Every structure is written in C-alpha cells, then in structure tokens.
Amino acid sequence: MINLFLIFCLSFRRWETLFLMRANAFVYLDIWTFSRTLRKLRE
Picture (cartoon, one colour):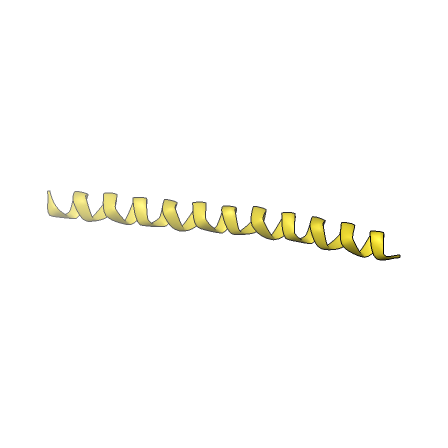
C-alpha cells in the first residue's frame, strides 16, 4: 500500500515538473513573440 502511494507521488511529481516545464516554455515563447512584435512596431 505504501509502495503504491510512493509510486503515485513520484509520478505526480514527474507530471508536475513536465507541466511546469511546458508552461515555462510557453511563457518564454510569449515573451519572445512580444519582443519581436515590439521590434517590428519600432521599425
């Protein structure tokens, strides 16, 4: 029973980190596109 709980916690943490990594990538993409649009507006 405890082993199953540990495996569940570990897998949940793995999914959490994957989700956070994806979210950070999307935020980075948003900032990159935003800076590109700003540069185009300045030209």
